[in-house]
Length: 312
Length: 107
Image (cartoon, rainbow over all chains, first blue to last red; front, side, top):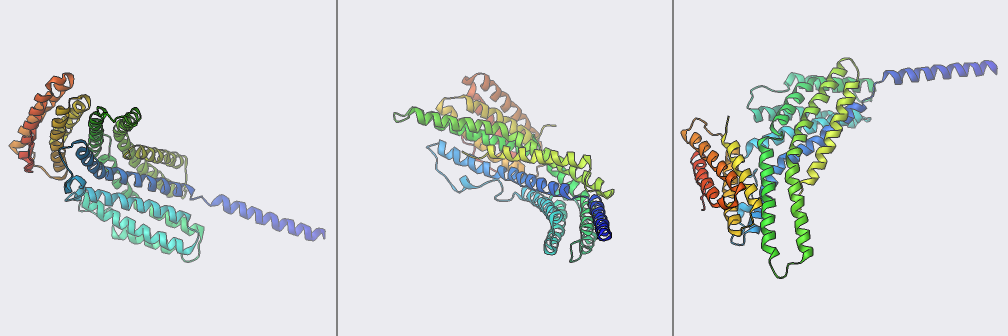
């Protein structure tokens, strides 16, 4: 009995030691997931920033018609900046979408625990990087691919190596290969967004002017209405609150673009930190944690700003 | 280095400040009209590749500078709004020569 108990204890001890050793040697992919999640959120906000140049144009035109009794709406009243031949803006949206898809697929791969999830994420990763490369080439008129066919094949090979059964080690190897191969593309695409969506960028200036013009049209409408015999205190107060909110939106608009631009820089920095970590077979480091946390914070701030810019 | 986009943006921003500060109905209407013309021109220069060596380009930049100065004066003294609109109209015509949009300059 004593001998049996002792053998049991030894077995338990050995098992526990093995378990501790295995968990200790298994770097977590949680920072990779956090990076993917925050980058995805930031990408969506950046898309909203680009789309604001279109929607705020239509809003301005509508408010102008509403504020001037002498004119009525035409087809042009509802036509935004993207209509017609704004191909350069559309190409930037494509770059952004592929970058966002990359972040989402990387997050999905890091979180996958079923073979079919890995296959799906891997297909999306290859598609996102291939799309990112093609759209960046078009948007910048550069003749060179961001990610070559050879690099895409390396990623595919790394993901194929995972096989059908999920083995954490192999999944990490695939994530590592992907981060290493994708980094130059992520850096260049992020730089493009950082540069073109800054506080003083053309789009930021144009959107801010649109929002300010809407405020002016609201004021014209207010001045027209306030002298009417039917005008009430409650209506005037409510209208003034809406104008105040619009003035705040005009004030926030450059900050929104500033944050999107800074967010793109943080995304590049966090990806570079991940690259540096995976080169040492780690999936986290103090720098990764710091830069991913900065990315998460700015992604939240950007979302908050965007909500304040919505039409009232 | 001044650009058409930058100078248009400066004129629009200053005219909009004037618009936000005036309560004279006729001034508001006229200012809104000319600002709308500028938005149309601005959209065009965002979308177009413009030849900066075109002599009309330099002339448009100078006109826009004058228009911005007139708008700044109007911001200090709202009695000068009519002059600001007139200068802004001249500058819009000069920009239109560069972008060839043939915008109908209203006032």
